[in-house]
Image 1: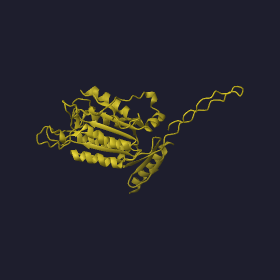
Image 2: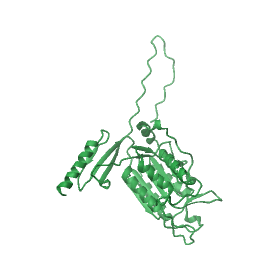
Image 3: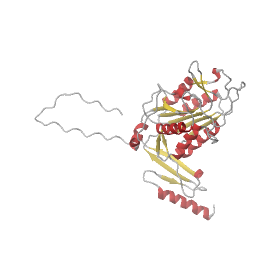
Image 4: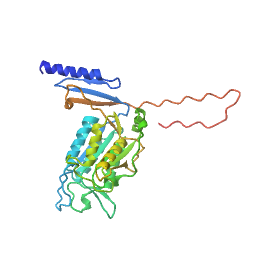
Length: 340
């Protein structure tokens, strides 16, 4: 490295140290031009993991399932954004997946999940709803015509997701396919602006969640939005995540924003809710924004490391003053201990 490049690197690292806030520890090292930032947030201790599936190139011999223009680009863009802006350290991308490959990838993910982890599963590709039975499916690239045995039934997706959710603290499924709303059980959770405090996020992050955001309900969804190279749903999903300025963003906030944007621009209404019967406790999947911009350092050379710590304990209420000595207190049962 010549003197001018070394000086630029030193100035960039010095700027990073000067800009550091007390709540975020900062580490730096130089090899070429590299910066590293550690972000400390009170939201638990788990790893952020993602399984991302993009199905574009269908090979149906009966030609019922045409190839799609955007799922590979959608999946790759989601992967990059989760890694670079939100600190996901375990990200697996599966492209043009067969039925067997989807099941193997979900099974492999389940084996890696630990109790405090945050797990996101994203699927982009064809979906199908049987009009006679009301059964929904993901359609893998090896699907054959109307043969439902070559599809991936919603009940199977739910079973696989239940295994992951049973092990993780937070699980979020984002499904960009037709009829993906058939996976849902209930509606969106609402967060008032005044609730968006660090204490609130710490509270909902401590509770288990199993959430779903779908591109549409029981309807067809579009493939390419305005020649953007993305589906309308994933276009606005990426837009919301990319332009988010909050350090912490709840899945329900993301779902609300994406739903409004999609519904305002195309004939499609995304839906969100929870997966029924797998232990959701009204918690929230929280996206932690950990990207950093350092003057003089290219974004691709900035290394981000997430450090999270347990949520602060809630202070116990002060005990009530004792009754006067002249008036014996009435007998009453002891209050139960608070449940943590």
